[in-house]
Image (cartoon, rainbow, N blue to C red):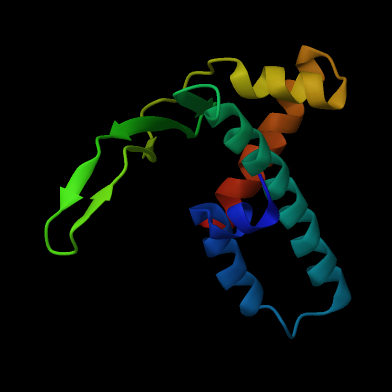
Length: 132
């Protein structure tokens, strides 16, 4: 996934709006925002990659993204077919870990389960704070 996909995701749309509001902040606050952006980029990258192979990815304690297949349809007004596609839905009731994100962190960063889980919890906490 390229950066353009990240920028069009709902998480980054919300974050980029927040960045526009802080243009006049001092360097310390800007560095903090860059750190938050990097954390969010990290978790969003993992979610995107996992959704290419799995129909559900759960952010422990936060919720899960579930892919639903939308069948192809014929648009009679525009005389064209809209192909079958998958749409990601967010389900806040899916809060128990499925282990996918933690396993992805372990593999990518070469860390053990405890460290991967800590990194994931920190990223989810940062994302929650930004989305509030």
